Length: 204
Ligand SMILES: C[S@@+](CC[C@H](N)C(=O)[O-])C[C@H]1O[C@@H](n2cnc3c(N)ncnc32)[C@H](O)[C@@H]1O
Image (cartoon, rainbow, N blue to C red):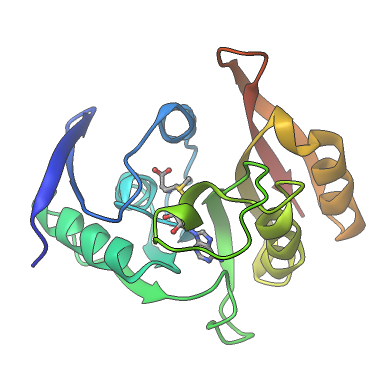
Protein backbone atom coordinates (compact mmCIF):
# COMPACT_ATOMS: atom_id res chain seq x y z
CA UNK A 1 0.00 0.00 0.00
CA UNK A 2 1.51 3.33 -1.08
CA UNK A 3 0.27 6.51 0.52
CA UNK A 4 -1.22 9.11 -1.85
CA UNK A 5 0.40 12.53 -2.08
CA UNK A 6 -2.48 14.05 -4.04
CA UNK A 7 -6.04 13.28 -5.17
CA UNK A 8 -7.28 14.20 -8.67
CA UNK A 9 -10.91 14.06 -9.82
CA UNK A 10 -12.22 13.50 -13.35
CA UNK A 11 -15.97 13.20 -13.97
CA UNK A 12 -17.23 10.87 -11.24
CA UNK A 13 -13.87 9.21 -10.73
CA UNK A 14 -11.13 9.88 -8.17
CA UNK A 15 -7.47 9.09 -8.59
CA UNK A 16 -4.94 8.99 -5.79
CA UNK A 17 -1.47 9.89 -6.99
CA UNK A 18 1.39 8.24 -5.15
CA UNK A 19 5.05 9.22 -5.11
CA UNK A 20 6.98 8.50 -8.32
CA UNK A 21 3.75 8.41 -10.39
CA UNK A 22 2.83 10.93 -13.12
CA UNK A 23 0.08 13.31 -12.03
CA UNK A 24 -2.58 13.63 -14.78
CA UNK A 25 -2.05 16.83 -16.71
CA UNK A 26 -3.48 18.72 -19.73
CA UNK A 27 -2.45 15.87 -22.03
CA UNK A 28 -4.14 13.24 -19.85
CA UNK A 29 -7.38 15.25 -19.68
CA UNK A 30 -7.45 15.96 -23.44
CA UNK A 31 -7.05 12.22 -23.98
CA UNK A 32 -9.68 11.34 -21.36
CA UNK A 33 -12.22 13.79 -22.77
CA UNK A 34 -11.86 12.26 -26.24
CA UNK A 35 -11.67 8.63 -25.25
CA UNK A 36 -13.85 6.61 -27.60
CA UNK A 37 -14.11 3.01 -26.43
CA UNK A 38 -16.53 0.72 -28.24
CA UNK A 39 -18.71 -1.59 -26.18
CA UNK A 40 -16.88 -4.90 -25.73
CA UNK A 41 -13.43 -3.65 -26.86
CA UNK A 42 -10.31 -5.39 -25.63
CA UNK A 43 -8.17 -2.43 -24.57
CA UNK A 44 -4.48 -1.95 -23.80
CA UNK A 45 -3.73 1.16 -21.73
CA UNK A 46 0.00 1.57 -22.22
CA UNK A 47 1.85 3.87 -19.83
CA UNK A 48 -1.11 3.76 -17.50
CA UNK A 49 0.39 6.02 -14.78
CA UNK A 50 -2.26 6.36 -12.06
CA UNK A 51 -4.64 4.30 -14.22
CA UNK A 52 -6.81 7.20 -15.42
CA UNK A 53 -7.37 6.13 -19.05
CA UNK A 54 -7.64 2.41 -18.33
CA UNK A 55 -10.17 2.93 -15.55
CA UNK A 56 -12.31 5.18 -17.78
CA UNK A 57 -12.01 2.65 -20.63
CA UNK A 58 -13.07 -0.21 -18.34
CA UNK A 59 -16.59 1.21 -18.18
CA UNK A 60 -17.26 0.21 -21.81
CA UNK A 61 -14.54 -2.34 -22.52
CA UNK A 62 -14.71 -6.11 -22.24
CA UNK A 63 -11.24 -6.08 -20.68
CA UNK A 64 -8.46 -3.55 -20.06
CA UNK A 65 -4.81 -4.47 -19.64
CA UNK A 66 -2.96 -1.60 -17.95
CA UNK A 67 0.79 -1.60 -18.55
CA UNK A 68 3.62 0.58 -17.31
CA UNK A 69 7.39 0.36 -17.05
CA UNK A 70 7.19 2.06 -13.65
CA UNK A 71 6.38 -0.43 -10.85
CA UNK A 72 4.97 2.36 -8.66
CA UNK A 73 2.51 3.23 -11.43
CA UNK A 74 1.28 -0.36 -11.56
CA UNK A 75 0.60 -0.33 -7.76
CA UNK A 76 -1.06 3.08 -7.99
CA UNK A 77 -3.30 2.07 -10.93
CA UNK A 78 -4.39 -1.08 -9.07
CA UNK A 79 -5.24 0.96 -5.97
CA UNK A 80 -7.25 3.40 -8.09
CA UNK A 81 -9.17 0.61 -9.82
CA UNK A 82 -10.25 -0.61 -6.37
CA UNK A 83 -10.99 2.95 -5.20
CA UNK A 84 -13.33 3.44 -8.18
CA UNK A 85 -15.01 0.04 -7.78
CA UNK A 86 -13.98 -1.07 -11.23
CA UNK A 87 -15.69 -4.34 -12.08
CA UNK A 88 -13.41 -7.32 -12.45
CA UNK A 89 -12.35 -6.52 -16.02
CA UNK A 90 -8.89 -4.99 -15.53
CA UNK A 91 -5.48 -6.54 -15.20
CA UNK A 92 -2.05 -5.00 -14.71
CA UNK A 93 1.39 -5.75 -16.06
CA UNK A 94 4.80 -4.19 -15.72
CA UNK A 95 6.45 -4.07 -19.14
CA UNK A 96 8.71 -1.97 -21.35
CA UNK A 97 6.15 -1.06 -24.04
CA UNK A 98 4.59 -4.30 -25.36
CA UNK A 99 7.70 -6.45 -25.02
CA UNK A 100 6.34 -8.62 -22.16
CA UNK A 101 3.23 -9.58 -24.15
CA UNK A 102 2.97 -12.79 -26.11
CA UNK A 103 2.48 -12.45 -29.88
CA UNK A 104 -1.11 -13.68 -29.61
CA UNK A 105 -2.13 -10.81 -27.26
CA UNK A 106 -4.30 -8.72 -29.60
CA UNK A 107 -6.39 -5.62 -28.88
CA UNK A 108 -9.25 -3.68 -30.44
CA UNK A 109 -7.86 -0.45 -28.98
CA UNK A 110 -4.42 0.61 -27.76
CA UNK A 111 -4.09 3.86 -25.77
CA UNK A 112 -0.78 5.63 -25.13
CA UNK A 113 -0.17 9.06 -23.65
CA UNK A 114 3.49 8.78 -24.52
CA UNK A 115 6.60 10.44 -23.11
CA UNK A 116 7.45 12.87 -25.87
CA UNK A 117 9.57 15.76 -24.62
CA UNK A 118 12.99 16.24 -26.23
CA UNK A 119 15.82 16.02 -23.68
CA UNK A 120 19.56 15.45 -23.52
CA UNK A 121 18.95 13.25 -20.47
CA UNK A 122 20.15 9.75 -21.28
CA UNK A 123 20.20 8.05 -17.87
CA UNK A 124 17.07 8.27 -15.77
CA UNK A 125 17.45 8.72 -12.00
CA UNK A 126 13.75 8.70 -11.06
CA UNK A 127 10.71 6.83 -12.34
CA UNK A 128 9.01 10.15 -13.04
CA UNK A 129 11.55 10.90 -15.77
CA UNK A 130 10.16 7.95 -17.73
CA UNK A 131 6.83 9.79 -17.88
CA UNK A 132 8.04 12.66 -20.04
CA UNK A 133 11.52 12.09 -21.44
CA UNK A 134 11.64 11.10 -25.10
CA UNK A 135 15.36 11.29 -25.89
CA UNK A 136 17.13 13.93 -27.97
CA UNK A 137 14.41 14.15 -30.63
CA UNK A 138 11.58 13.35 -28.21
CA UNK A 139 10.76 10.36 -30.42
CA UNK A 140 12.62 7.48 -28.74
CA UNK A 141 9.58 5.85 -27.13
CA UNK A 142 7.06 6.78 -29.85
CA UNK A 143 9.22 5.29 -32.61
CA UNK A 144 9.61 2.00 -30.72
CA UNK A 145 5.90 1.95 -29.89
CA UNK A 146 4.37 2.28 -33.37
CA UNK A 147 5.53 -1.04 -34.93
CA UNK A 148 4.89 -2.90 -31.66
CA UNK A 149 1.33 -1.54 -31.49
CA UNK A 150 0.66 -2.43 -35.14
CA UNK A 151 1.68 -6.04 -34.42
CA UNK A 152 -0.81 -6.32 -31.51
CA UNK A 153 -3.99 -5.05 -33.18
CA UNK A 154 -7.02 -7.14 -34.07
CA UNK A 155 -8.55 -6.60 -37.54
CA UNK A 156 -10.06 -3.06 -37.59
CA UNK A 157 -8.07 -2.29 -34.43
CA UNK A 158 -7.35 1.29 -33.43
CA UNK A 159 -4.55 3.18 -31.70
CA UNK A 160 -4.89 6.49 -29.84
CA UNK A 161 -1.53 8.17 -29.30
CA UNK A 162 -0.96 11.55 -27.68
CA UNK A 163 2.11 13.58 -28.55
CA UNK A 164 3.33 17.15 -28.80
CA UNK A 165 4.07 19.45 -31.72
CA UNK A 166 7.67 19.50 -30.40
CA UNK A 167 8.10 15.94 -31.64
CA UNK A 168 7.47 15.93 -35.43
CA UNK A 169 3.82 15.04 -35.82
CA UNK A 170 4.08 14.39 -39.57
CA UNK A 171 6.77 11.78 -38.98
CA UNK A 172 4.46 9.95 -36.56
CA UNK A 173 1.64 9.89 -39.14
CA UNK A 174 4.12 8.59 -41.73
CA UNK A 175 5.41 5.86 -39.39
CA UNK A 176 1.84 4.62 -38.76
CA UNK A 177 1.31 4.60 -42.52
CA UNK A 178 4.55 2.58 -43.01
CA UNK A 179 3.07 -0.04 -40.64
CA UNK A 180 -0.15 -0.26 -42.67
CA UNK A 181 -2.35 2.01 -40.55
CA UNK A 182 -4.33 5.08 -41.57
CA UNK A 183 -3.58 7.90 -39.13
CA UNK A 184 -4.90 11.42 -38.56
CA UNK A 185 -5.07 13.98 -35.79
CA UNK A 186 -8.38 13.54 -33.97
CA UNK A 187 -8.09 16.59 -31.71
CA UNK A 188 -5.51 19.18 -30.74
CA UNK A 189 -5.08 21.72 -27.98
CA UNK A 190 -2.75 24.70 -27.78
CA UNK A 191 -0.47 25.10 -24.75
CA UNK A 192 1.46 28.24 -23.74
CA UNK A 193 4.80 28.93 -25.49
CA UNK A 194 3.96 27.75 -29.03
CA UNK A 195 3.42 24.10 -28.14
CA UNK A 196 0.31 22.13 -28.97
CA UNK A 197 -0.67 18.60 -28.05
CA UNK A 198 -2.33 16.23 -30.49
CA UNK A 199 -4.40 13.11 -30.05
CA UNK A 200 -3.73 10.90 -33.06
CA UNK A 201 -6.09 8.11 -34.09
CA UNK A 202 -4.64 5.35 -36.25
CA UNK A 203 -6.55 2.35 -37.51
CA UNK A 204 -6.02 -0.77 -39.58
C1 LIG B 1 2.77 11.02 -19.77
S1 LIG B 1 2.63 9.67 -18.64
C2 LIG B 1 0.89 9.22 -18.91
C3 LIG B 1 0.24 8.58 -17.71
C4 LIG B 1 -1.28 8.36 -17.86
N1 LIG B 1 -1.59 7.49 -18.97
C5 LIG B 1 -1.97 9.68 -18.04
O1 LIG B 1 -2.44 9.96 -19.16
O2 LIG B 1 -2.04 10.45 -17.07
C6 LIG B 1 3.51 8.38 -19.53
C7 LIG B 1 3.53 7.04 -18.82
O3 LIG B 1 4.22 6.10 -19.67
C8 LIG B 1 5.07 5.29 -18.89
N2 LIG B 1 6.16 4.81 -19.75
C9 LIG B 1 7.22 5.50 -20.21
N3 LIG B 1 8.00 4.72 -20.97
C10 LIG B 1 7.41 3.50 -20.99
C11 LIG B 1 7.76 2.26 -21.60
N4 LIG B 1 8.86 2.13 -22.33
N5 LIG B 1 6.93 1.21 -21.41
C12 LIG B 1 5.80 1.33 -20.64
N6 LIG B 1 5.44 2.49 -20.04
C13 LIG B 1 6.23 3.55 -20.22
C14 LIG B 1 5.55 6.22 -17.77
O4 LIG B 1 6.04 5.50 -16.67
C15 LIG B 1 4.27 7.02 -17.49
O5 LIG B 1 3.49 6.39 -16.50
